[in-house]
Structure formats: C-alpha cells, structure tokens
Length: 152
Image 1 (spheres, helix red, strand yellow):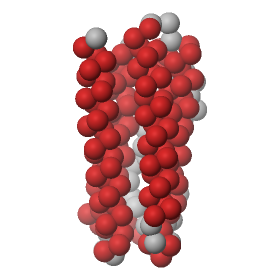
Image 2 (tube, rainbow, N blue to C red; image 1 turned 135 degrees about the vertical axis):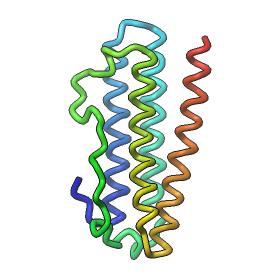
Image 3 (cartoon, helix red, strand yellow; image 1 turned 30 degrees about the horizontal axis):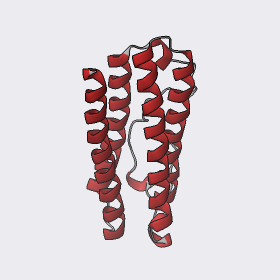
Image 4 (tube, helix red, strand yellow; image 1 turned 30 degrees about the vertical axis):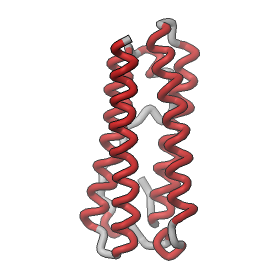
C-alpha cells in the first residue's frame, strides 16, 4: 500500500469499494443459487454506493487536508480482498460471502481507527473520524439488511 496523502487514502479506499462492487456483481452472474445471487447483487450495489460516498469525502474536504502526508504513520497491513476477482464469491455460500464482506469492512475500519489514533492535525483527525463513522454506520446497515435477507 503506497499511500502518501489523505487524498490518496480516500482514492485508494474508493477504488477498493468499487473493485469489490465490480467483483460481487460479476460473481452474481456466475452463482446458481437464487438467494446467494440476490445477496451478491445487493452487495454489489451497496459497495458501488459506498465508493460514491467515499468520493464525496474527497470533494468536500479542504485541499490542504487532502494533501497532508499520511505515510509517516501508515504502517498498516494491506487490506485483504479479492483484487483480481477470479470469481471467489461465486464459489461461496450466503454466510461465506457475508463473512468475507464484513471482514473487508472491518479491515477498512481498523485502518481508519489506527490512522485516527495517530493523526496529529485536527483536520486530518476530523476527516478520519468522519470516514470511520460512515464505514461503521454502513457496516451496521449492511449487517441488518443481510440479516433480513437471511431470514427470508
């Protein structure tokens, strides 16, 4: 992960969500089970929306905050995701997909939390707090929606 500024962090996070959206959507077409296919389609749309929301953070943030260097305290393990989408989600069942996606969101939240704890500039802390809050809220919403789907 070669991220030098908060702007690049936002770009990278947006791209992760967009890549996951594309991968989930692609895998939905290859999944035979109707319930799992519906889950993949829902998750794909949700991740695309998250990519759009993350992009808004970049548009609404002050340029000097986005240009603040982040690499001085960015010593975080890379986020594990199926970056090359060789249809891994097409082979998982409903619960397996749920676990994978929630784990992905957990890793993003851990990254934001770690950076927030180390950030010294108030504007950077505010940006990270807002990103973390958004990710937490969206993860809770996702868990509720998937729980409802699982009940059907």
